[in-house]
Length: 249
Image 1 (cartoon, rainbow, N blue to C red):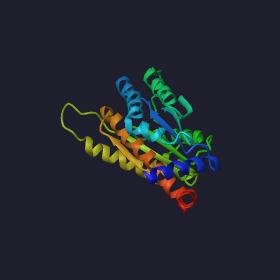
Image 2 (image 1 turned 180 degrees about the horizontal axis):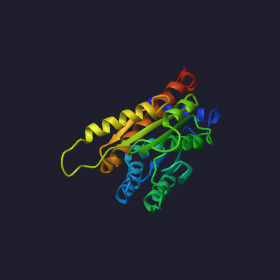
Image 3 (image 1 turned 135 degrees about the vertical axis):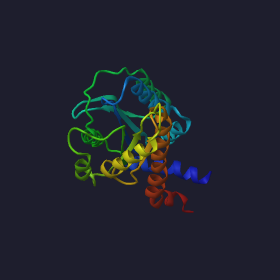
Image 4 (image 1 turned 60 degrees about the horizontal axis):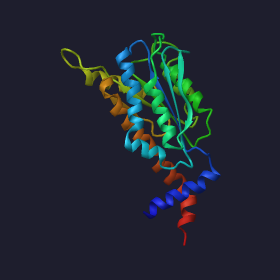
């Protein structure tokens, strides 16, 4: 109880002296040629379901005076991106419901078939550069390796050190009719994303064994990212200053 009160007080004070936004979270969704209509729907509805989950809602709404900003875009070939949700401050349940409603109502449009993963990361980091939030995080969902545009490794090397964390949600193949090498395949793809794509403080790869598991994997990833912000950012960054002052007799 005392610790929770100190955290709330810390955010109230820190929110006036630091950035008005505690975290910017951009989500880039893979809609390239390898993603069919069913998988597209599972991805949109899966993200909506994850954002609507109780633990994620609670984490997003925990400190509305220093809110999280959300943005969502979909990507395929280099230069082929569409902004689905512009930067939105999650300051109320209604604001979050608006984001969820936009995702659930989204209808797929024809896209180029290529997979420009490096360009997708560049686009997301460019969006994060538009914000002044304390923590800036990019989520990239993908079900395959890059085959067009700049190499993800080159983008990673160029953008590392910019104060941005890039995490990934790797989507494996759906269950086959015969045989099952999905664990091997997703292990290989996860290693690729880990080596070539993600970077920044505490960057990690989450996995979904097929698009049917996308919603649960996205929820795990969001809970982890938002928890890192609350525990690491607030306690580690603020406790040494504001909380210490509040707690001093």
